[in-house]
Image (cartoon, rainbow, N blue to C red; front, side, top):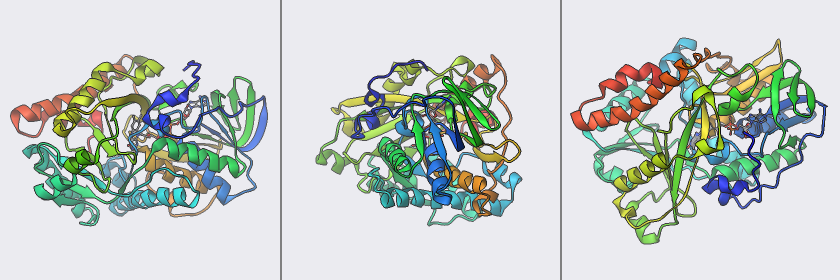
Length: 463
Ligand SMILES: Cc1cc2nc3c(=O)[nH]c(=O)nc-3n(C[C@H](O)[C@H](O)[C@H](O)COP(=O)(O)OP(=O)(O)OC[C@H]3O[C@@H](n4cnc5c(N)ncnc54)[C@H](O)[C@@H]3O)c2cc1C
């Protein structure tokens, strides 16, 4: 890291519009002792602190953050608080059963509502709006893939209330993109303002008596203690909530890889433009291409739009300069303008990026090792906004020993294998990332489902 940031508002559209001066909280003054210490003040760390305090208000809890709360992905993301869960269905079934896998997904759907409930109850103005999600089909191949996905979902126990195929007119009425052959709608998604959510949550947690120390970098984690630059913090329980940044911790270089996702945002659009575009109930949106893209209509009337496509950096390096790539920003603006020619004369005012964490088996996990007192959550593969909340509730139950339904969900206690050493890691991940782009080109050219995508599925987490 090592960037002496003076103005965190320049990190993203969300930081710029959070109505927050991001003045850092005090750093840890020196060696200390707590009941629970949490490393990382993103949504994982803060939801964990929130629910732990509610479960046992006598616990002395500290959160240690190397920059400021919401500095990482939690403050920068696309703002989809969705029910998407990255672990493949097959893997969830193997870890539990068909019913267990369905229970995992139902828990995610409840979590979308829980995020909104807490924001409202705690007075966090996160612009939460549960307008669902629309994923368009912009080619026949995409349409066929969507039909197959909905058929499969319904065979697994989901219903029309969860995933519904849209006729072309219906899809176009939701989002008047070009071209639209159909789409899928799910109500299980809310649009949020990421920075307002995470910053508001930090304030709530602090007001409850949790200590948050900022500009406090943790060097290593061990049973009963974490080492910082100003000394050790002793705690019976240590929770690691560092997601994509985890490789920076001693001994955890190969636990997850940091993969970058980048975003652009327009100026606020006019009412006439919105009339011609749609998104009237603010559903988040995407289309069924292989390279992941995601967008939302913000509460202040902009389009915020992002996608993968940035390369993985050798040795899991994280640098401020990687938050931006002129090529990817250019591609994102181009893709959005292709989808929505209505944006011809619209200015793009913001561009930014950040890193998210991917485990070797593409499986998110949460757990607490009772022997060492070390807990963790992460590996959300870009689906962390809601999942962090489920992780926080689960970690609170694991720490306090509550026998809840959450602690038996199939992702609890899962250990992903480590990534390969370099240069294999670099070669494999970048090949996988490239494959997603090539698969879309291949489908456009051949008008058939991509062979590359099928071949690369093991490297790209294909479900
Ligand atoms: C551009 C982008 C778009 C995304 N869009 C979406 C989306 O629309 N929907 C969705 O569900 N997910 C999305 N994601 C993913 C989602 O944002 C993350 O999965 C989620 O925010 C992870 O939260 P976290 O708290 O685990 O990690 P983070 O928010 O990254 O927080 C980790 C924190 O730990 C701190 N830290 C790290 N190492 C140390 C250390 N050694 N000592 C002290 N502190 C440390 C970091 O500074 C950071 O603040 C997106 C991610 C990105 C980057």
